[in-house]
Length: 252
Image (tube, rainbow, N blue to C red; front, side, top):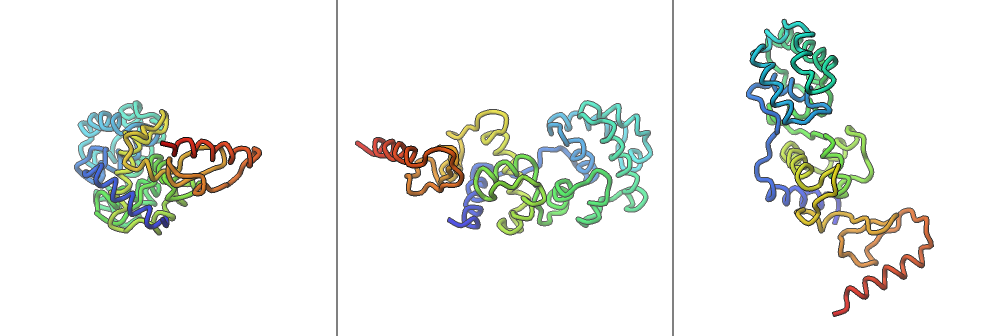
């Protein structure tokens, strides 16, 4: 199976498992998503959704938030962590939207990148969710899962992962695919606990870590399908033991 075929199959399976591909940040206007995605750095979406209620109650539009004192913004957003830098970026960003874009969020990727506190991940999220344009959002869930699944190999840099996925994911699927990876990463293929592989719709497609230095195409994969990468132990002994185990498993 090529990486292109693998990617398409993963997309198909995740569509079945998670038919609704939605952003978990609450918003009803583009500028609010811009604020929320900045607050979501090193903070859960659930906490952000609670915190922004108080922010928008006091500052209900771009103009009022642009005119707000940074210290007042910081006081409200402090529960999201990094309050000082996030408040500074939000204030500066809203000022630019108010002064240069008539309180609107630009629908140009490069223009978004020029806004304070907006990186490639945030810009892609806005492009995909707000404007319905092709987008690849490489958050921590996306990066972890595409490496585990084998869509990319050992790439952890967000921009490099994004560039690799642009070559594999159909343009119309990118945004929803990344949302589904987030949901799958939270519910099944977790980071801080042991992944729930028994519940995974992709489990037989994952590369198991059967032995140090090996990768394989499935958990039940016979030894002939294993690929040797780096191996610090006596290889012939490990191969012999692994062959014996496979033979025992195949016996009636």
